[in-house]
Image (cartoon, rainbow, N blue to C red; front, top):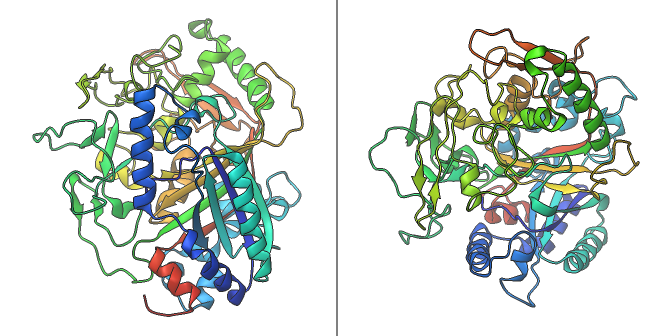
Length: 512
């Protein structure tokens, strides 16, 4: 639940029969990183970084000099789990049982054989090379990760497994993704404690509880607290109509308790094409007299909903301020339906408020951050509390070297995002988010256009469409693109069990 967040991570996909997969897990089990260890480490790192005023990759070197980290997580595919007698995950989530390759066309991936992004050509997870185990390795030092990966991959081969794919991701400067925008500014905060101690919270509180409102409770500006059962089995779930009260939980398969479904997507980003296509979109928009001044950067910010620095356009509609006035909390205190009041953090930092934008006149309805997290807005699913049930724990990391800042021609380098997300239901969270919201031009808010940044709209003459409105009642302006600047190149659906359940799988036990 805390996430690795380490600057260097490696994804390893292993092909194996059941006996081989169990042998690999038995050997690697002592290396698996518990959530409490990750949470405690990051708490020390963040506090030390604030004291020393170092951020990004440098903040990891400030914690425990000379003691490089070796962190590991293991997730298992549907077939080996079923063969070992653990039927619960496949029965609980049909999409998991089917696998990403069989579900890819429903997500908008190419269905024409030979087309870029078609599942038969994937680098990992293609139907011809099923993945039994997905290993996520992490370290705060590149050299240490390389050594850890080398020894881990050798152990997989020694047990008879095949390393089908291995790739290293590196956090980029400013925590940006390859299109140039800061990523991960807004994540859900999870309720719960790491121990019985009152103040040993999984999500540290940077805002004092208001004790009065019946609306969402925030652990930090814009960070809504969500019940952990939306991501991890065996914990209280979110009530669809109440932010603060948990929903009743039915019986949970003992093997699944403490575990979570993991989605892995290898997404290649065509950065030069993104720049070319968005320049064309801006030119199309400037053809309308009421948008004659729209620059290329202005349009790109409206596709994302933020400027490259992470600053929301709702707070900074005209220009990117570059850096927040204080911490990144200042870039996350906003809603869409209602104005957000100014607040003060528990450390005394003043956080400015933000105006509301219910009609999408500043932050368009198609903006990526609005499509995947409507915040305080009612949607086709119901009230704002219901939308929290579509949140994901995103744990991805970029791969590949960045393109030159001003390049407008592709350089042939494969770069993109190793997308990772944890959720309780692949079908009801990840897939619904992609199918119903990102790939739709009318949901979650009516007639807003597609998520042009990462959505995959069904084939049409227009392609993905963005809709702009200057004022209430004014004529909407539509621009569209057929250019695909993100190509799926692999992935898979997995289940990440608890430590106890991993041990049970490794021993071929049928009870936890």
